[in-house]
Length: 77
Image (cartoon, rainbow, N blue to C red):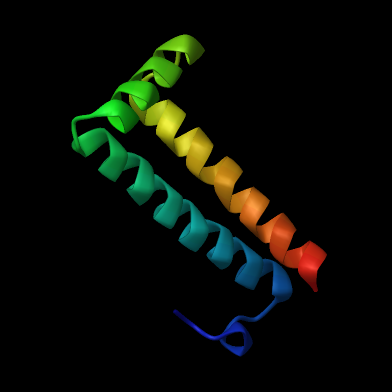
């Protein structure tokens, strides 16, 4: 992962971190979908309730998680 001082601005660094955290969250969701069982079934039910496509749901949730992670990080500092 690049160091904070490698970015030209704070905003650029935060956007990079948002993308990084979203990718990690999306990976976790995809892994949950890929393993049959209760967790996968629960995720599929949650997606169906939203009316979104699985792709749109996973992308939206990944960014929501990334935003929450950045907010928690900011609150801690």
